[in-house]
Length: 203
Length: 203
DNA sequence: CTCCTTGGCTAATTCAAATTAGCCTCAGTG
DNA sequence: CACTGAGGCTAATTTGAATTAGCCAAGGAG
Image (cartoon, rainbow over all chains, first blue to last red; front, side, top):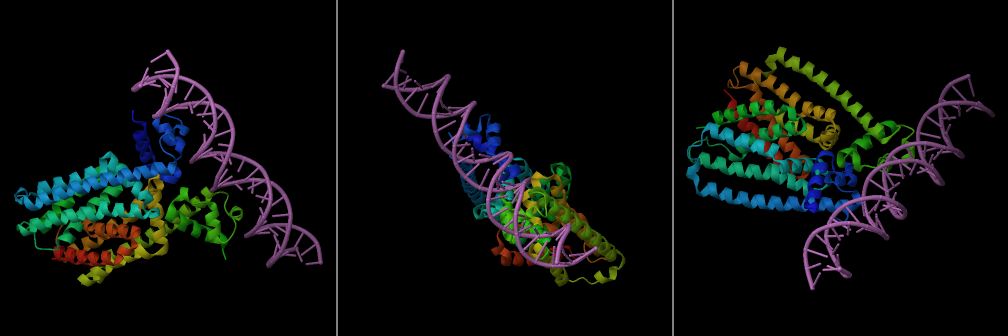
């Protein structure tokens, strides 16, 4: 159907597997089901395709953070939702975060491409840090602060707690990104991590 | 001096910055201070240079793990060294680990290159996981088990503790890899993390 | 002192990938 | 029903990176 869109899709897939420099326009074209020269009816160069992907990333990212900001405010206002957060719910949040990051098709390709290209492009480096460090930590810090205020968790530094909660999730995710067969193992230790985290910090 | 060695050095530097596919043999040659065709007196192709770097990685890795195995046995046998491990010592271990990984020139380039190439090469993926997941976790699990047995730490799952200790260090390291200007910030939160970890788990 | 190997250079050569030229078809529009 | 523009194709063309050919200087070994 929409060839222009499909080109970006195929290109992102390939870039996320091999990196920009190791992907040939012929491969992109093949994935789309057309010949290489036809690509140029849609984009003026390979670089242009890359830029378009970046542009799309920026848009999605902005939408997501806008979304998150709303949700973020929600949990500040409407705090009774979290009044009785149970260990099982915490496990669900953690596993949910992990599974979403790991399996969401776009998220996954996006992350792999950022991983590969992060050192050659400052903007990508920032995007990566925002998405996989700043944002999750901010969000979870807020959540934990709330739980502390409500007396459900010990009065410890919520920033540190967020780091300790999130970093293992992130680390396990990177392992599964490169060795997908380890997902079961990762899920197992992930659950233990969350339960132990809860046990140690709950009041 | 030893041109053959220097080629590997320069090549690793470049590969770790841009990735194999975005580095031209001319750039390697320039870094070495010779012309591109002269490279072929030492290696038969660009790919061959890459292989030689891999080979060197493997050797160093094997040496290191052999080293670690000795040290590892040491702390099992000679456990009184750890009888009075203080919080400050724990901080030193953590910061030391972090700083070594982050600043050791070879380690750093090695890691960045693995980061970039991990998805295109199964061997690199495994090497990466071993060096930045399996090995550190094994090592720290052993250390923590010891502390638990000695009654210095709570009887919790040492594997999970190791994950919770190490993952934040790793995550902060990846942030600094792509945004070196954040190192001070990282060190600050890192220290807080370790102290809080100790506070929560110490017996 | 001559020889031969090592490691450098310049000037080709090769080759593959990106891009351009120019043609064709088809679908929608006046 | 002719026209036009979008989007595809094949066949060039360009480009530039990797590699090869072949020459040369220096220095150690006989």
